[in-house]
Length: 268
Ligand SMILES: Cc1cc2nc3c(=O)[nH]c(=O)nc-3n(C[C@H](O)[C@H](O)[C@H](O)COP(=O)(O)OP(=O)(O)OC[C@H]3O[C@@H](n4cnc5c(N)ncnc54)[C@H](O)[C@@H]3O)c2cc1C
Image 1 (cartoon, rainbow, N blue to C red):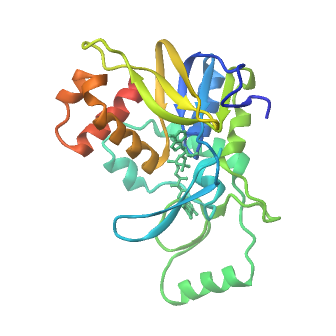
Image 2: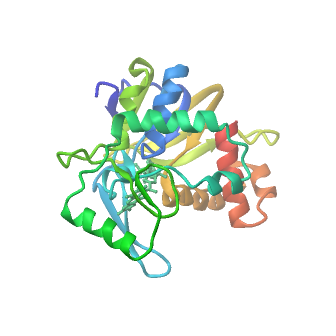
């Protein structure tokens, strides 16, 4: 992939229209789409020392998260289905459903495959139907009641197709992907009247720090996964006095602040 650079590569520009933090399941298709519509952008990816990072939740459940280009789509079970209709209705967001379904097809045409129904899968489907989990929906990508055959990001040869492949659908001349880059800080404008993110500070595999900025009206988009995003929230809380009086005044409770931080980054 000629648009992928090591974080310490001097060819990486310092100024972009969009900076997407986290080249995972969400970040890769987002970066590809933005590059196809706009000019330069850069995607920052973590240090990639281990593709799957272990962690244990507060409830004591051991889990892993993907720390490579493609994110958790490179280590997950690969089951693919579309979201529940109720999710859209209850989300409080006015979705353009035409664009949502177009986006699903955009992903499906590249990395989603109907599964091979081996004896084990066929037996489980039959058992569910026999146990009364109906109706039998056959091969279906919708999130529906009953038994169905979903799809997979593994092809019929057992090869995984992760979100990283979606980067190829962007405008490759306008895309810069930095690997072995750990974003340490999101930089905000120091003007008290503005809460805009203006850039990021990231470190390369040698521990050296670099900065990248967005042009005027540019955007920094945080898509570092649920845990990655939470880390940024913690950093923001630690640095609140320094970065932005406005954020501080909105610090009503952690969840509220995390939401408003993400929104600020997404919409500025
Ligand atoms: C074992 C397992 C099995 C799963 N099976 C399925 C399944 O079958 N079907 C399904 O739909 N879902 C499954 N999931 C869930 C699904 O994979 C995740 O919900 C989805 O990948 C999350 O996407 P994301 O873009 O939010 O985060 P991710 O895909 O995790 O991407 C986050 C990216 O941000 C990067 N990042 C984080 N912090 C930084 C930083 N500071 N600087 C730079 N980069 C950073 C990470 O390295 C990563 O590349 C599974 C998950 C796991 C762990």
